[in-house]
Amino acid sequence: MARVRIRGIYATALTKMLMDKGHSIVQPSEKIASRFNIGIDNSPSDVTVKDKDDGDGVVVIGFPSEAREIYNDIVSAIPYTFRSISQVELHSVYLARVEKNTENTCIVDTGDFKTELTPCREKPGDKVIVGVAKTALYPWEKISVTRSFRLLGKLVALIHGMQKVTFSEHIRDQGLKARLTALAVSRLMGSNLGVHFRSSARFAEPSEILGEIEFLLNEYKRVVSKASEADAPLKLYRGELVGVIGFTSLSKNILDDIRGTVTPTIRGHHSLRSMGLGDMVEAMEHCIVNGCSGDSVSRCIWEYVLARLAEGGVIHIRHVKPTGEALDLTPGRIHRIERSVERVRVIIKRVISGSGLYDGIGVEKKPGDLDYMVVEPGKPYIVHNYYRDTTWLGSYINVNTPPELSVNIVKYHDLLVDVAVAPGREPIVLDKDELEKTFSAGLIDPRLYEYALKTLEEIARDPTRYLYNP
Image (tube, rainbow, N blue to C red; front, side):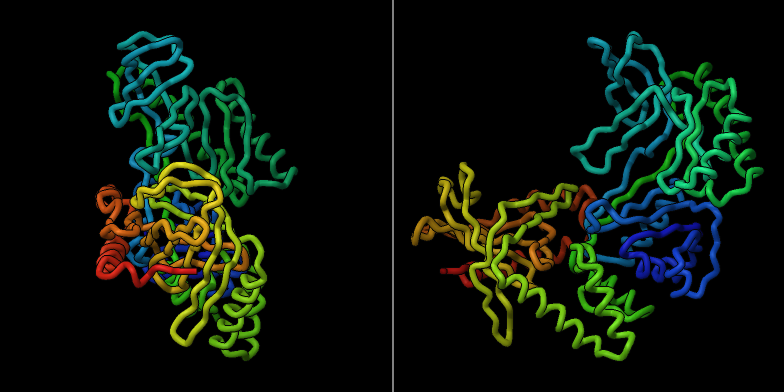
């Protein structure tokens, strides 16, 4: 079992799920400690789980075996995710062999991967120690290495090639920084090594820090000695495993349910918080704590979102791909909102400004064309209906997770397959091979893959019933 530090908007749900798996929660926030009635354990973590920069999922980072266990536990318990895990550990250290040198840039072979090293004056066949400064999470990303490398401990990292003291962003107290610096200098003076104090160092005793520095110094000597004697390529020291898990609207619904077993939680809690409405969510859940009906409060928030959308401001559209990219499409404005007992349809009017061809429709784009984009909350598609004046050019049915709506944004996770419908032509299924390839690469949860295929099958039966005529 691993010791896990969890931060961010998914902390309550993930704490519940990981505690049920038997893991220990360390360095909990006061709110988490109170909710779960656990003591404050400030021992170093093996793994950190924190929000992605866009708030749309989490990053799992830590010592390889423990981080992989936590990553696997999350993706097995929370289905319908986009996910990726590094095949090469961040900050791992390799003895690489130079394959080619061109104008101060070498191609080096580490045994696990090949990449560029700059600057480089070594000749082909020479060996060089490199550290992984940036790992790759997606097929289109490159691994970056440098001559500077670090050996990671739980409290500190020793750094070859940088003779200075640095601190985690979580260590802010100037007095503590001064004391930690004095400790490092007392042991590393003359070693030509730098040191980085990790966030857990702020809770550690001086003797613990000095003990880890001593251990890492011995590891450094071992690594350098081994590199001088061994043949390249060879991995010299482990780094940290990095995993990214993207939570779709379907995943967030499950996280809402898990959180709801711990504390009052409105429907859409994690979706709304991921889109910047955390204060409003907190206020509404405070109402539930004080006796209001959870269903009533959830309906109230939904009505508020629709009312704000109906005001007609600019609506931003975020299209999230399983390859890690997030595209901001040309924004639009609300054309109309249609409501019935069975459904809600939000129609967004977008003015086309680009050029090229409408994919699968075969018609040239012209500035001033209109896209009537139909968004149905809870439905696994978005429909783009293209018009030039009053002439219908064709429609494009995008298969995706049910869209998430806030007061000025529509966000959805693209499932890659689409159906194109054009006048006088049979409907065309597009990019099914992209879905297959992405699933084979492990970037899409198996349940989400099946969900995409089922949705595509349903749409393909009669695509015309999804179209919109303004």
